Image 1 (cartoon, rainbow, N blue to C red):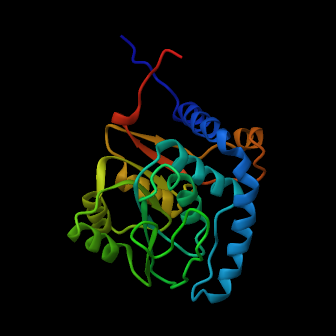
Image 2: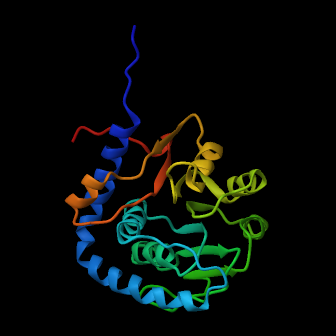
Length: 234
């Protein structure tokens, strides 16, 4: 018998439709998140290494990921000016007041401002690890027994860092990969992190983003464990 073949691009569109549609219940927060994202641009002046940051589409998609999966503990590689950090915090802290995002930046030591629902640098908010490589943050978290439900990666991981990451995330953790295009770091990370029972979800297509009023691009991919995928009747 022939096997049923489903194109990954088609499956990816279905996944993003589900996530973005779910986030529409909070669509009134989009403009406010856009304003705060612009305010965070001022933090570039204090950067030792000034690099790119998320588009508004990617920022909202990051919010949508947090809103849909609602993790209580997050590990993030690549804080920079905090757009993704803030988006995730806005999404998850209303559901988990004691949620914590552990975020490191190997190049910068920018301190993120306290924003609504975000208590920076405290155990019940955002815990920053400035000028800290991923392997060092992961090692600290491992030694403290931290187990995250979501990992957001905006930095290329070395093989030893991948091993450490697996020690600080739960087996059913979702992994978000920024810059999933061409030969960028997101693709390199996916090649190391995708397992046989995982679903690799490509970034959302521009047509889909436009249908939700998002005008620029998003290069965020997802790795979703098979255990979190369920077929429903409606």
